[in-house]
Amino acid sequence: MHEIDYRKWEEIIAGSYERAGFDEVILTPISGDLGRDIIAIKSGIGAIRVIDQVKAYKPGHVVSANDVRAFIGVLSADQNATKGVMTTTSVFAPKIYNDPSIKGFMPY
Image 1 (spheres, rainbow, N blue to C red):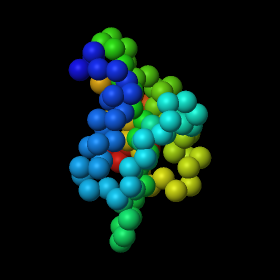
Image 2: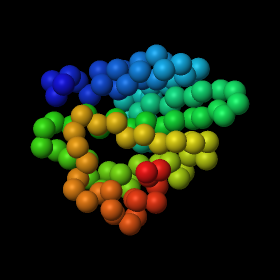
Image 3: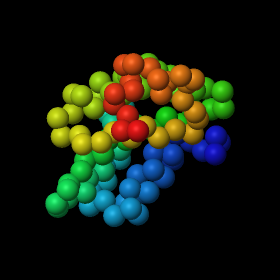
Image 4: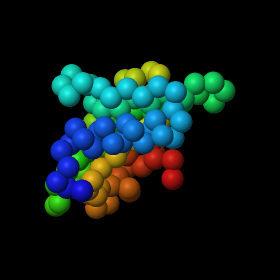
């Protein structure tokens, strides 16, 4: 898993949204994506627009609280986002789930 190029991971994740039946899946450009690696849209009643940020990190490189806080900023700036997902090949930093600046943004 850690030998796959980060862009390939983004393509794999984008493909999973397509396979899950999303109507439109946008794999953003490598640079200038404004923190949005994938945008997945499901139209109709209960429409959703998911912003996914993919972190293809090597072993030992954890997703930090600052990474998550930056992503929360991306979601806050995108008025059309209904859900944010951070996909990673790694793990999240210890105690991140209890961080008061992050906890309120996690559904459970």
